Length: 250
Ligand SMILES: [Zn+2]
Image 1 (cartoon, protein in one colour):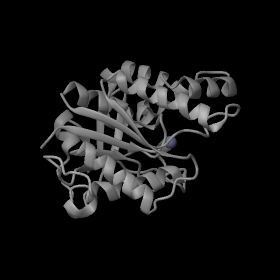
Image 2 (cartoon, rainbow, N blue to C red; image 1 turned 30 degrees about the vertical axis):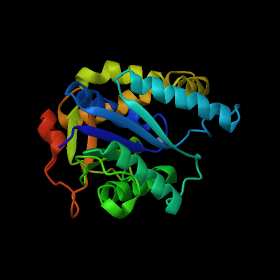
Image 3 (cartoon, rainbow, N blue to C red; image 1 turned 60 degrees about the vertical axis):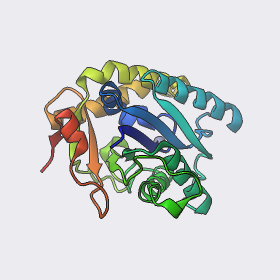
Image 4 (cartoon, rainbow, N blue to C red; image 1 turned 45 degrees about the vertical axis):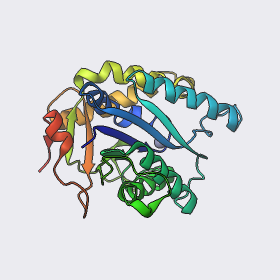
């Protein structure tokens, strides 16, 4: 198995909020890390036009990824207009084909907003399809196989109806919190927007509160939570828990 992890999430700061601690641990264990977003973050400003804020957010995504020698990718779709359709599906499959991930992290099926849910569909489709030789014209890289697939937490750990979700896997990220915070802090445009709105550093504090809440479940200071996709054809052993002595919910 090649050791390549790909996060396929919606917005340029989602990985840093939801799973960067685990990505840091994977990078330290020698994994090749790829952080992809489906949309450009072009609605992430109250004052700048789409193309300007999109360019700023692309640079912020690249800077955060570079802190752990990861590579940032974007499918180039527009915020709040993302649709799982023939074209976006092809783009996602081609990206997966190029990267050939053995481990994929995406949003859960149900989340607070539809860019996340449509991204879930894209990632789930591409994870299954990319190793199928005829799924795209791009060359098939060695090691291509249906990857381990995990869903990170929905925002606030609750689904669209406000119901708490039950993780299968909790990864201790206490030792990674400083670097996770540094990665999130690369998203200056979003941090400043929230800071001016809340009058406090809510961007960083909200991430820490959520990691601390999952830490309580895991019996550590900070943790990240995942639900493993264990449907037909996907590997069912809990790779993340095996790698990092994760706390597994029964
Ligand atoms: Zn998001």
